[in-house]
Image 1: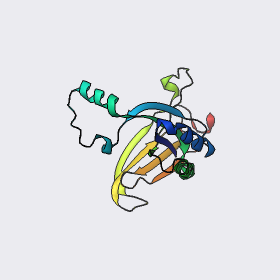
Image 2 (image 1 turned 90 degrees about the horizontal axis):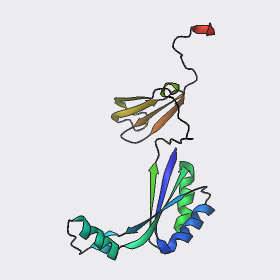
Image 3 (image 1 turned 90 degrees about the vertical axis):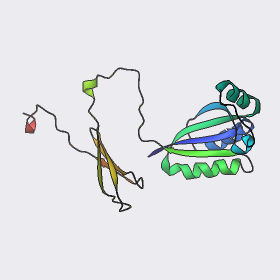
Image 4 (image 1 turned 60 degrees about the horizontal axis):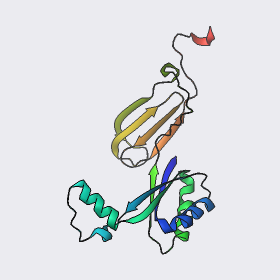
Amino acid sequence: MKVHLRVFVEIENLGKAMNALTDAGITGFYILEYKGMSPQDWKGFSIKEDPKSAIGMIRDYATDAVLICSVVDEERVDGIIESVEEALKGEKYTILEVPIRKIIVSNGKHEAKEDRAETWLLEKEVPCFYCGENAVQRIRIDMNKGKIWCTNCGAARYYTLKTVEVPGKSEGGK
């Protein structure tokens, strides 16, 4: 499974974080600049509920920060996080791991809808193969693969489908 790894750092620690990520082997990333405040920073503030006041307060008091994002294999996440933790020891940062259910990359060419197989999404409440709890199991079937995952514990099983039935063709290719 792929993970969207998000590292929030103050702007002055951007270089340290980027070096740690590249040293840990990430192959690409993107960066978003933002202004951030932790709960300790706004404790005691009373923010007016109109948008102009709230945005003005953030502009005046928030810290310049950066969000560094990368898509990585789940198996590599722990090593990458250790590298970032070591590089940013004593600094403020936040790391989020967000599991990715699907990635769609377009090559810019329009693919006809009839060229694509329909994806089936099903749900059934049965005991989980992993946690044993009676929970909804979600099932996704694409043209050549299937996935079943538990809504209770998140455990997943993956299947590769080896044959495809083509409507209108007889057996044996005749």
